[in-house]
Image (cartoon, rainbow, N blue to C red; front, side, top):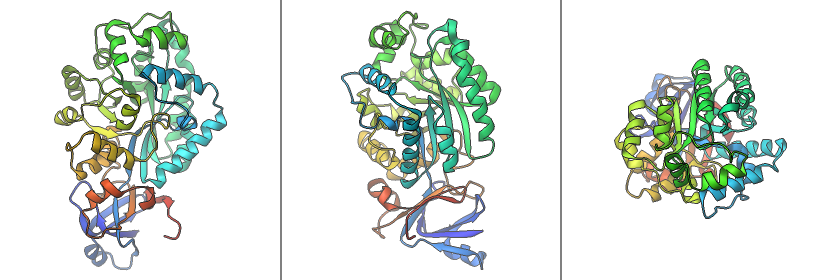
Length: 419
């Protein structure tokens, strides 16, 4: 057992503790409180006093595509969402396994040096799973599934489904979980969605779906027309496939298929009707809010206030480096704060980036707050303004240059040299 202490401890589950400390026993937190009380109650234990620093739960990045870091600065924002997707599909054809692997390694390094301890990653290749397993990070790796031809659904599903089973067996021995990601309502057929749902239920998997991201998606689900129908599907070999059930919203479509529940994370969720919002709240689905990616692609701004009013769990995600400048959740928090000016306090943004993300991924029993029984997943940042409000300081000043230490299960996954 050992004790970590700092000028401020932010449990998130309770107000900040000045001159706080926490007791770590193996991979778990056993006690949290003022350093004087912990020191008195546990004499003789090893201490590490970080001094002018802030200790808080590790950040939770609920949505990434680490492998797409190979396309960093290669996929420009275009005049439309469909233009961007077409460019992405074209450029992915030139990527090798080695390029994907390097991108994952570099992405993980960026995550840990910015204080992220938990991630929800979507992979179309499976390459991120071994990299994340080796890193020691917590999270959910979602295997992506794409296919629009109902008549070929079983064949399309065969390879990713076999891969999922193997990944799940590997994940039993570490902090990673495995999930499934039927990509989006415009890229997965009804039959394939149902096959994914059946596998999810059989294996006890979590699921994530890109949903209501763009106006083009809304138009396609409503009328079967628009750029997805006329440009995207023909360019990706699905031009002769009939649209799915029409006259509904993406959320309504997923609800009709039985996919909405507490294990379903909807990514982006920009274009939501009042009925959509009610469906999310009633079914317990969660949302990954990716404001920088949404702005880059020009798809709009998610109705964060309405989601919070209905108590829909929302976490923050950076999305991929093909649509975002960094994997730093601090950058995401600051952008979100500007985009939703005045909506949340600094403490509420920090909560969304920690316990909110853990709840969105269904991992809040293990991580997201610093309290007895939780995993010792935490980050320590230097405090250059000792008199500052810690939440205010983190919102405006936190970044990789401030990170001193990142722990997962009590083990360092990043440590500044000389600490």
